[in-house]
Image (cartoon, rainbow, N blue to C red):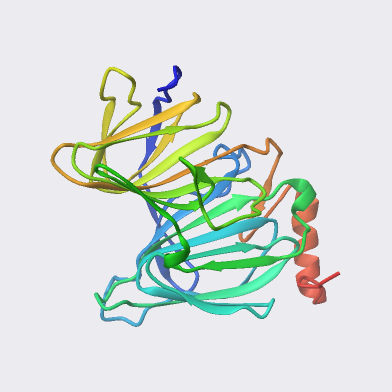
Length: 290
């Protein structure tokens, strides 16, 4: 263990919001000028299941600029199509990582799985000012390509970054984040070195955990569903409660420490750049390859 374990700074209760064509989401946080979650901008947990008899709704064609979006599926699938000509479907355990750069138009339309539900997450990661007008890029990773690390009571799927020598398949992301899906059996503990100064959060969507573990035992208990925000330090410890299995998405990354100007699907550094995005949309130059 390192000697500066991170403590739980706060828990966030996700709020219900409606986006796209009527998609009901649990949103833990969204883009804000104060940029408290730098380099992360947004985290949504979506489930198109209320009422389950209704055809699922989704996200018709819309623009993005200045960000990277990550979609990670648990159940059901999402069909993607964009202005780069990419088309594909991601299902359980698959990942879609899209770098919008200077501008991309895309749509995401869901379909229910055999269980009748759709369940997954979307994370937005910021781009630094020097890369906000870069060429758009798209990565689609199937479940079989995501490495899994198993230890007694612990199952880790590494989507991006590296953990104990296991490197995730999503690469060339400006923030160089760590993004993992972690399952803990009752009573099992997970420890992770996290570089001091990096921002670290975990979205607990199953079970209950104790956070801020140190060499002497447990920390504070938290029950799902919550976003866990940790303070600074060089290690992170989370232990599942003894009475149930826990599962969470863990994210960590170095902040860019740049001002941001968010507006809907755009996150730039100044208000003038936001205005330029709308001008480009009107002029038909938003997705120009120049």
